[in-house]
Length: 298
Image (cartoon, rainbow, N blue to C red; front, side, top):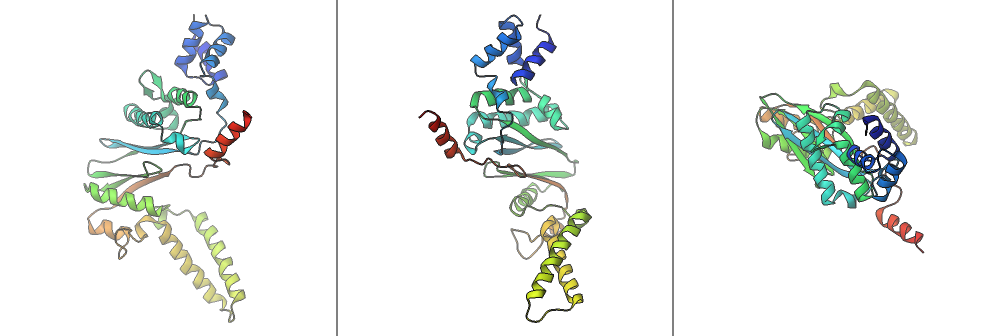
């Protein structure tokens, strides 16, 4: 009898999907070592060996259904693989799995079903098939009220993806604000959302910068002027990183906040994903990797 614990043990040792592990154990009458060989012979267990690779390429995507939406990122090791039809198919299948399962966390998402297998199994299976680590890096679930609207925008096919919620029903405005967010990358919606430690860190840097400039000036400014200079720069910093205070990319005469007000709307929330942000990039590019592999056969 092939037990769940036996399947789990094989999965832990090989990194293969649950269905593959169950089939391998069935084919080998429950013999773990033979099952490992069975998986290796079919190129399935090699996925486990790629678990420590850096997957900093890929695509982001957004799916919506009714008052529920998801923005998520699926990573690969190279941009080349991210353009693969199988990768794109999995990306889209994950979106449908998220909607179907109403997942709230990355753990929920990995257990969501694509047909008869979990998202986790599908990732491992494609990793084995393509030969690169494929991973679901992050997922954010966003909901809205009936009197609100989702905005969605993807840049370069999903290198950047933005999801927002606006008051009202103006879907065109919501998309336009998403495009602005993609271009200008605001960190917060409003000034009152900026953490105090972020402001203090910036103030320390700007103060030292102003002091250095003053030390090199032909006619140094008094201390009270330096303080005012720093506060002016802090105010500019806050406007640069807050969405509603940024100059609107489609009309440089107004801010995003003014554009929203002019249209009788306001922003409720937004999420912006950019592929690989905050991750260590691979040291070698794809061409260098190919060259390295060819060198091995000389």
